[in-house]
Image (cartoon, rainbow, N blue to C red; front, top):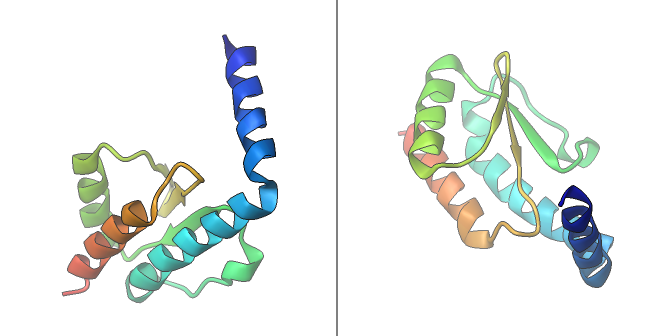
Length: 108
């Protein structure tokens, strides 16, 4: 089953094209980052990051954002104080907008 899944994934990547996927991911990542930026402990060089957005939130913002992510059933990875989000081709602009709205709410 894992080989069939991998084959299907490779076929989709080849059909869409790596450049299309990378551009899509970058647009979504940048949108979420702009909303998160005031809540972070340090600035990030997005042009030096890959597809995973690694965010070092202020502690109170981190806790609140994780609660919001859990309420959505969203997947994320927490490494120490760094929250990692990976937006991909299956994520929509609406997904990024929803994350951005949650982050904007925390800034109030």
